[in-house]
Image 1: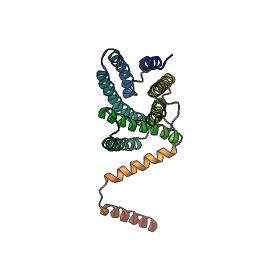
Image 2 (image 1 turned 90 degrees about the horizontal axis):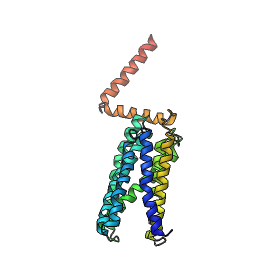
Image 3 (image 1 turned 60 degrees about the vertical axis):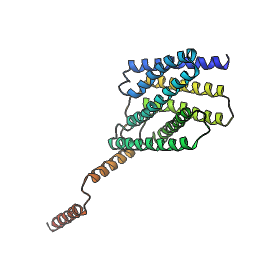
Image 4 (image 1 turned 180 degrees about the horizontal axis):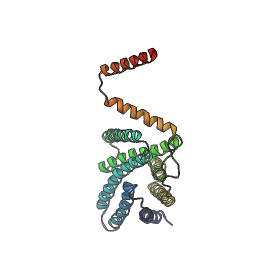
Length: 270
């Protein structure tokens, strides 16, 4: 099988795998637990239904615009999926979940700023739209790889089982994102051809989608057991939130200290 035929086969295989994933999620009613991820699977099917005819029938410019529009949509959805995974992981710990949401928003802002710096300083890319979207895509892929590393590093302290579906979602995206980061680095370095780049990235995406199907089939929907370490973190954050809500004046604090001192003195005399 030649390289163009292999690329076409891998491309046609993508919506089939995503259709199987969506079917499994519907039968196990997982679309309510991971609505953004379920929407991502449906969008990939719609993307193929639009892009494939455009690629074969329309001109290059039309396909180019269609491809980058869907790529931009995927970026927004994939970034939201990262937040969905972290929300599911920290579901038993409300304070940690709030902190994770705040950090997630700041990470999004930093990602946009870093992308803006690269966009304004990079002039090597021929097409400006493709360059800008590609830089944003690399930033999201770095976060996806970091998400997998975070789960591998903190799964034991947080009591996260590797059988959980959220772990499988992160693993599939990490596999696809890691392969794209490596392959694009080798491609721009002149070490691999465009055909090798396309075949490798599509193969890894399909493999990541198969991982999603396996985890959805296992359907290990189990919350992390209350573990001492994250419980202490959650309690500490709750205390900080309560302290922050109290008046910042030192007078109430000193009054409370005096009251405690008087009560101890009275107890000793009694």
